Length: 493
Image (cartoon, rainbow, N blue to C red; front, side, top):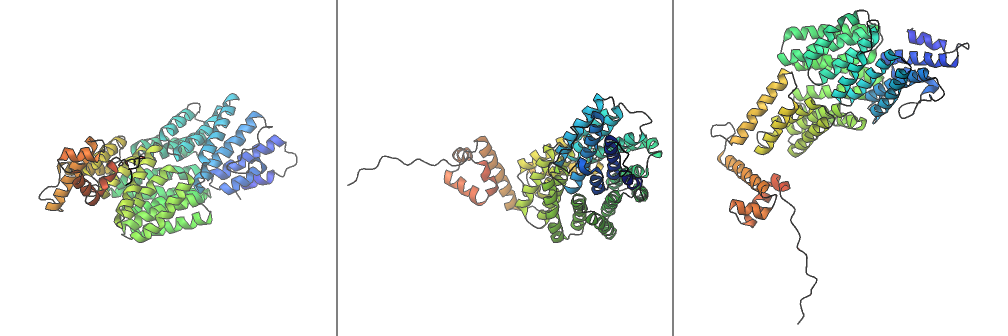
């Protein structure tokens, strides 16, 4: 029996004052939430909170007690909303946590305010607002002392999540190393998360550098994480670590082991009725299936993943899933759909400030379609956009992919070369023709008549070329104006 379960029995104590009972419910809920047992946490809160979308009844409570209720409800709303992909849950959680911070600070409870700020930073991270998350968490650390072990540990873990999301792995590793003394005296649950985060960073570095020593160290950290989380009965975090292990095996081409770990993670999340994390497991499986060239299976699974993240408002996760869907459709020959979905991935990620994700989506678009299917100016613009978005990345693989895109852009801008692998005379002529037509349309402001005149062509010839050989350029022309029919009738007879 856990400490939280033992405390549930204390709620039946008739000698408890009402405010004491409320605070006890909050402490029990916090322990269940920290262990990933969200349903048990909701049950522990009882009549204090009915769930996401409902405001907890705190009006008659003293400010300090009300702040505790708001903190637990806000933290639980953020985590549960992320797990179940509930639309609007993060904004709802942010409102509750912001109110809790104000109440704690007004009472001089700065340590409790810091914990609420930590949870607020996590909401910003889930929404992809990484700069806001960094700012909030840095502020949360300021009033804390060495005695505030648990809160400091939580904040450091959340800080590394933000850096990992931006592929700033060395910053994340430095945070974890500097914070190691904090975790030595922390609970099993926090130790498990610390080992898990360290495993994730080493995993990313091992993958980027193709370093087998880092690969082995990552597996050791992941294994330690599972051990401590099992001791803490934190099933959700165990399953997330299994998913991360599967991703590591996938990156090193060990697909059979990847599927085995995914099966274990899927079993846990299915039993916990956790569609958000289950969708992330499915996303990892899609990556493995793409590597195995099992595109039809991947297509079926990724459609459900995109739907789940779209409904839940998880923009960063949605953008990543859209990239995978774009790749799958490209490999299956659905070219136009692939291009559209990859452009959507760029816009979704950039729209919430997830610049690395947006940059990688643009890189994928060039990799899949830049050599032939996109126009040369379009490839050039995409490359410049990707270069801007990825300027802060420290990931060697990201940089290598970006350099590959630069080579594609340069080749396209210089035109098809005689000794290229896919060279053909008519292909080269077609490419030059498209380039000149696009340039003429842009200079003519989309006017077909003026563009034709610039190229020395008849209007009908130019229109025929657009409609037959260069349909991709049709959106660049301005809509044809319809002539008004005369209201004056010709005289009869």
